[in-house]
Image (cartoon, rainbow over all chains, first blue to last red):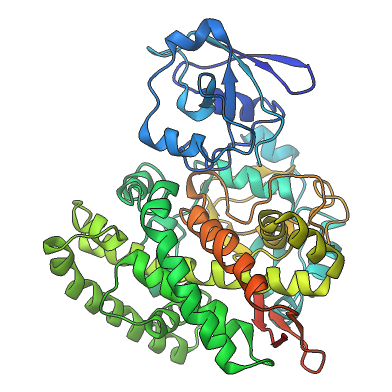
Length: 109
Length: 396
């Protein structure tokens, strides 16, 4: 089963198993991981599921779409040019990532 | 699901709640109701009002159990069947057809300059009206209307048309009393909007611009849906920025310490987000239960007409400390004023840009000594839509 490892601001870690086809934002919201809001439900519209992807997974990520790019300019916590992504755009399993490890920003709003 | 429903508590009835009381000030009513349950059956409005934050949030995120496609919807009658009353995948197709028109890149490229121009126009109008003028009618309403007119692409209408269309179509959407005069005005506006769209579509196909109508003219969206979506956008796109400007100004002028902090730190975003938490411009919207189900431990019957009261959720003490107060320094928690899930407000970035980046900072900069008129207090009203309707101000 695909897996997301969340390192929350403040140090706690959540490991969440995810259904294939779901995404990092939904994994967080459905499992009550603090620090991910996901206001718009996954339309790349609100910039409240911002995560910093950890190094070993960066090469496996999908390309950043135009919609995601403009939302990454609107995040509440600073954007990291290499590591910042929207969790809703990172699909797990089903041809997507099998595992991803992310840092959750200090704030989303 | 049956097991869950069997174990769920019954929803209490709130027989004493009346529409005039809700209109005058719904918050004490929500406080009283919240102390016993997060959902109440309110006969006066013929709905189950969902007032708890968690319960509202759950409804927003679950369109399988709580459909936006409401039976007997007044909004459908007033505006046609827009995406706001559809679930995915139908909703998603129409939402995507809006493309980038309302998003940050288009705001930067096109709309920011429009907001600046409107600001200059309606600041001048407010100044001409002189100290003592009503900030809502002389500035906030025409400013929001003119911005909306240009973003939507109505070259053949004026901001007064936008205001009339928006108000009468919204009045139809909220016409629970089934007043025939309200329907007549809504129908007239609906026909006017249809005619304006019909006139603009060939013009914008020949001479496209960055507007929403030009964008939609290039999509296969059926005309009936296009018309309904435009009317929905005229409704929501005007009152939110208008009311956010007025409520934030009223709140800051009523809280001088916080105004000083905003001015010193250019904290307009904090002031705005707190004001729409405090008084959500769109405070209630409908959903319909698709099956017997459980919500916040309570049994909701299939077909139940729900009112998702984000205006109440935003003051839930389980989430917000001292929620009845206006406090720009409160710990940041996501409010529900823009809705959530797949119906999250498509105009949220337009609202933030036009209100936070332009209207509020410029108003306070251009009108030194801006203050409330002690002789004529602000008037606030509404519960489905709530806002400051009259805001007499002095300056200088």
